[in-house]
Image (tube, rainbow, N blue to C red):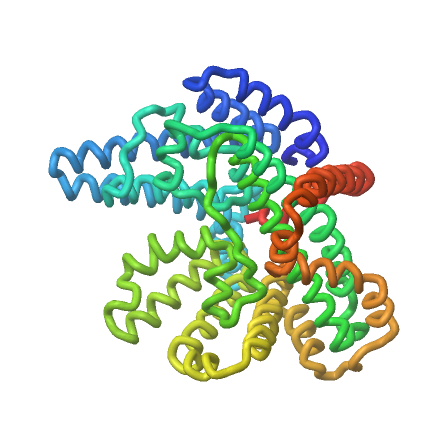
Length: 466
């Protein structure tokens, strides 16, 4: 188990920041590397060896790629890149997909692969993609090679975003790893962003999660149509505040350490199309697949048939990336079909529709998608989707009414916080008021979050399991 959030907030993080800032500038990458390894080893004492191996393999492969490129040995440079990619994919396959494939084969009567029952290394889907992109970018000459193993190691295991992103490409932080900007305003901005993310997770996501669990655990016979939609609406907001909250915390911590990480969310629930939604949700993953899979396959440059094939491969990979389960494959296929429909048929129609209709359309298809994402058992998923569409069930019951009354205020706050409305209102307030109210709100949010954490149970971030 990774650090409890309470221990991390009030013990580990203050010590880390103190050590980091009292260290000479030239030693700060070393401090960052060591505290990040301790952070990871606390939750994964055995798998820390996998992390160190990953650092070693990709560090040496980066040097090899750069060397062969300088020597004009293009085939050897390609082989080195391929070797790095294969290593990372095999690492991901072994820990994340071996048991899934073995179980699938066993169910089909071909049980020649043993089920190993290995624990999934935390954050493996994130750090393998980061290190893969490094050697590819060195080959493309989009970034320079990193010859300092400490600096490269600090990039790979940087603890603020190590566990659940955003996925950071080396070229995005290469200069920052060498020289960073520090200052009171930057540090204060980092604290504000971190506390906002913490409040998203603890005060909003966890409470929406309780409502989702209520409906998820119900027998299909006890669900009603409106109850099932209320449950999936709760999950939609839980997932958004959970994952965007972690990203906010990572970006905030990065600022405290002198880094500026890329944004990972841009109010996805205000999107006007499914394509627009995926430009706003988990931006670092969608751009990774665009840069390292879709475009290398040819993108949309080689005709309609190849474009559709490329989209299918990207969305298959996106689904599988999220988890070793057939529902994630189905979820990827669902979005592939929607994206193709929008590109080929719906885009002209959608442009003529009122904005309100577009938002309703996006939220309906996204919420159906989250049902596929959340419910791994196909039988249970089928029952839940039937209820959502009112097949063989009542419209509502007293449970739905009771939960609506109990969670009405939380939904109002959640919907408000999931749009730019809050930021727009804040910007219109007097500067003097904001200077006083800002720190008060941050302190209040921190204290409320701490109180919930101390009083509550362990609630890891959802994306830890990916």
